[in-house]
Image (cartoon, rainbow, N blue to C red):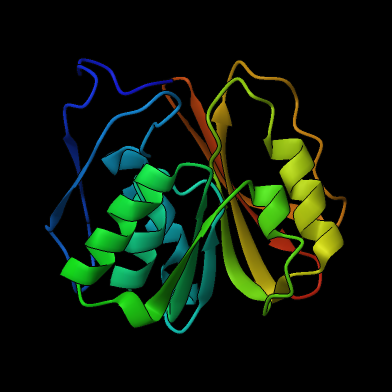
Length: 199
């Protein structure tokens, strides 16, 4: 869905919640399907991820405003690849990275998540899958991620979807690690079966 209460071209802001850039506000231009993860959900998610973030390689497969990947970098992730079909969204993320002096910690790729996952890439420790609701992209992208074998031994996969959406069909080697519901949003953290995590 598009951001609510805004006119076309009117900028909004996302706030980095924790880490070295805590409190920084970064502007983005609302667009159809762009639905930045809310502060409350992000705070819960990054509490879940806290033990695993430092030094992690991350991929934000539906980057949009960049809120998830930038939060990860702020909290100690080593690198994040931002992927989006929108050149305008990626340009804004690149501006944010420059403002934060973090260009050497990230790369931006224009295209679909499935196209990106066909590249030869190093394995990821944390992957964010947060597509526009209603497009049923979680299942095919999850399958593509598993097929590409781009997950590290102890990888974590975050998935955000509408509560009212269809049942997700995920790779059988992924197991649910944490999950919550906030309003109409279901957000879940999965782990790969290759390694064990400590609760």
